[in-house]
Amino acid sequence: MSSEREFDVVIFGATGFTGKLVAEYFQAQYGNDSSVKWAVAGRNETKLNDVKKELGIPDSVQGIVADGDDADALNALTKRTQVVLTTVGPYQIYGEKLLSACVDNGTGYTDLCGEPAWMHQMINKYEAKAKETGANIVFSCGFDSVPFDLGVHFLQQHATKVTGAVIEYVKGRVRKMQGTFSGGTAASLKATMAAAHKDKSVMAALINPFSLAGNEVIQAQPDGNKPYFDEALGTWVAPFIMAAINTKNVHRSNYLSSYAYGKSFQYDEMMMTGPGEKGEAMAKHVAQDKSLASDDGPKPGEGPSKEERENGFYDVVFTGTASNGDMLAVSVKGDKDPGYGSTSKMIAESALCLCKDVSLNGGFYTPAAALGDSLITRLEKHAGLTFTVEK
Image (cartoon, rainbow, N blue to C red; front, side):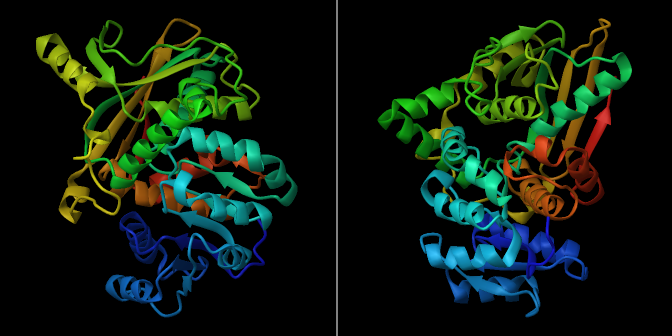
C-alpha cells in the first residue's frame, strides 16, 4: 500500500469502549515507534481530548473530528490515511458511509463486523468499485473471526506439509474460554435479527453458509446447531454463538483462494463441554442459552473491568482426519478475554498488517485471505496469541 498519506492508521470510534482499548494498545505498543503514524477519530472533540489525556497519548497523535453520518468529513478523513480501523457498530446501522468513503478513496479498512447479511450486501454493492480504486476491505478482524479463520488456514498448511493434501472436514472446537461477549456483539445480533424479520434476503444470507462465498451451495455442511457426543474427540459439544459468522468467513477464505481447501470442504464450530453426564448437561444448557439476544444482555459501550479483561483467555482447537488417515490438530490461544482485551489487539495488528506487510489489488477480503501468515507472525509477536501444532 502507498506510504504517501499522512497516517498509516486512523482509529475511528476511539472514544467508545473498544475503540479506547485499541487506542490504549497503540500507545503502549507503538507510542515510541516513529515508523507507525496513527491518529484517533470520533465525533466529539472534547471526548477525544479526554481519551488522549487519560491514556497519555501525546499531542503529536492527532485527534480528528468526524461523525459517521457526515459524508464530507469521512471523505476528508479517508483521504489522509492508508487504513481506517473502525470499532463503530452495529455496522449495518453506522458503517456504510465510512465504508463507502474508503472504497471511493482507495483506503484500506478493517472492522469488527460479525454481521454476515450486511457484509453480503456491502460486497455486492461495493466490491467492483473497490477493485477499481484499490481499496482493501477486511471485515471481521476481532475474535470473530481472526482466531477461527487463521486457525483453519494454519491447520490446512500443517496438513499439506505433513501429508501433501488439505483436510476435507475441519472441526473448530472451543476448548476453554473465559470472558464476556461485547455489548457491540449483542447489539449487532439484535439488529441482524430485526433486519431478518423485515427482509427475507437478510434471512437467506444468514442461513446460507456460502452467502459470503459466491452464494452457491457447493457442499452440504455439518449441522452445528444441536448438542451431541463427539466420539472422535471424546466429549460433548454444544452450539457456539459465533459460528454463524466465523463459518461464513472461513468459506469465503476458501472461495477467495480459488478453493485452496477444496470444493468438498466442510467446516463447523462448536464448544466442548466435557464427557459424561456433566458434559451432556452443560452442552444442553449452552444450547438453550439465549441471554446474548435478550434485553438483559450487555449494552453497547459496556464491558468488563480491566481485571476481568486481564484474567480472560480462550483456547480453540482445529482438528480433522488427514488424507493418510491421521488425526491432525492445531490450537489457537489468546491471553486476554476474547471480546475486548484480545479483540482490541487483533484489530490493531490487522490494520498495521494491512498497511505495512501485504500487497493486495483491492476488494473485500477475510483476515486469512488478506493477511494470512503475516498476521499470525504479528499476533504471536505482539498480541498474546499462540498458534501451536498439537499433532
